[in-house]
Image (cartoon, rainbow, N blue to C red; front, side, top):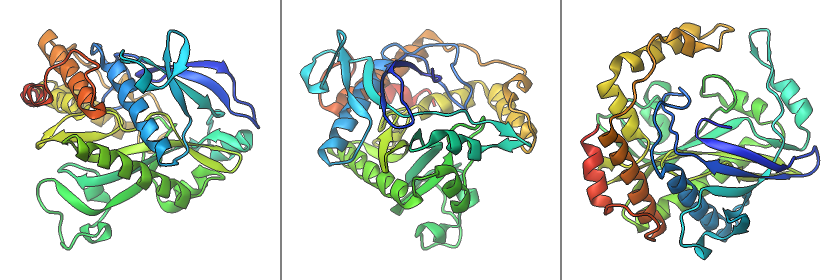
Length: 340
């Protein structure tokens, strides 16, 4: 189980063969790496499954290899186009996920890859950015000229990049961290960074083009990949309001709305999370949540309803079908903009 998806194995992967399984998308949400928050957002899981399935279909139409097999309806694997009900389950191929041990204060990727062989989930997240908002960590890690901007200092406000930027971060460590090329190359194992970056750019292109078709702006996102028998495939799920940031007429339409709401209404908890992560940085500890003190407070019923409407209205717009009983996207976005 992840923080928001349940994971079901039907046929385990072996060192040589892909297995088969399913994602079950729950209505839970997670922000700031906390894990499951106190509330659920009705229909959130179905909206993410719907968007993910639609994007996988778009990727496969472009010849981009993925682990997607279809959605699950009444126990059968079918195409999203063949149902009028928003799905909750997605059928996928499975790669091995070896344990990532901690040794001498660090993560032992050598042991991970010794156990992985030629069939494994690559322990990286490949991040792509089309825009750089205020507060983005990229501003502290890269100079404007490094990403193609003709500026000595980072401009105020959100900046549209001339070309997408691709970066690599950890996948299975307790806290995500951005990596140098050498670090990412060692962690990737048999997969090459050039392959992974090229795949990320193609996924970004497909999602960006689809977003533009329906009046959305695709700002950034990430992919995960598996390696099997010399081939890299897109894994996990892509192009949803949890994995990616989208906006509509300048307003956020993604999990970022809930992040910003908590920053405004529960600043003590957000500050405690940041302080706890900093406290264990450079140590062998991984239990930063125990250092936070306060737990996040539940959301009000009106906030939950607004968030649910945003997810479902956005999914309807993105796939171009009225699969959910939701507001028009403009109305849902206007209501959500009042939360930030």
